[in-house]
Length: 374
Image (tube, rainbow, N blue to C red; front, side, top):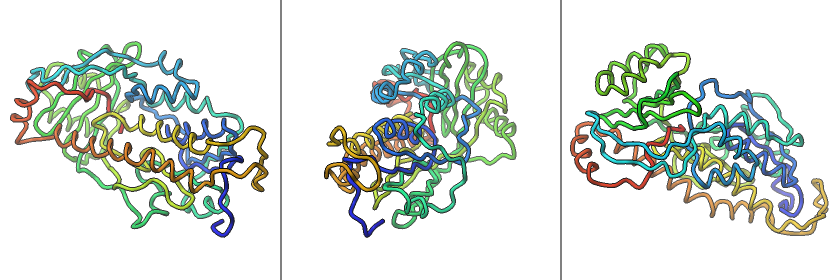
């Protein structure tokens, strides 16, 4: 591949996408609709079993509208107007506008994107342990394979691995209307409560890292840390069950440019971030749309199809990927850095009383009560 002339964006490209999460599915839809030959690989193509919520803001909603699923997403989302940021004793530290966000279960979003896949997309269900063959047969390899991305670890200098922040996150859903819409910052812990569409509660919590042998044991540990602090939290935790709870750590990736040779990274593979600004899925959708844009520019109508490049000469793939890097590197890294700063602020322990006094009179511009999407 490297000895041949670079492919141009004026003809359909052969694209291989590794990973069928939000970023990979969105990219496959947009790129296929633009006439490219798309192969989408994933080990499972599964829909998340626990439907915890993502917050989707205006730009992400525009991408979903472009894909054609925004109406369905709206119908299956909650759209609260505001929530509150509270101290451990229940004091309101700030009123948080929702900013027009839609709160949609990740399972719902993935299902709708799967259903929107064009028939032309070739889906392959298998585990990939070596990306070299994928690189050899495609014009472009697209890594949408998450925080532990094999594409990133195989093709970027230093094989950048994800790093742990020493935190444990629990996320779940429960029956019943949420007692409030809030995020509570304690001393070294946080707990959030948001609504699900219809009737139901989405909740999330973050604690210093604690490894328990089971989800049930992790829930009991959470109750021992935050139980008895606030009635609203106790009510939600009383309804929580292991079957509807997820437990995981927080891992992020180092700063990098998401383009190298004929490979590009999308979503968490490029900029996995702490969940504290609720923008992981938003940046994934923005990445997918931006890649489709740069690969579609300047393609005249009626150009030829196939790997022999029957279309007119145009922007080469290297230039298109350079444009993608210029467009998406800084926004992705900015959200990654900002989310990490918010995590540190929310999880302050000894300095929590000072933090609460400072926040008590200061308006917050960021909707920090958005559900966690890590």
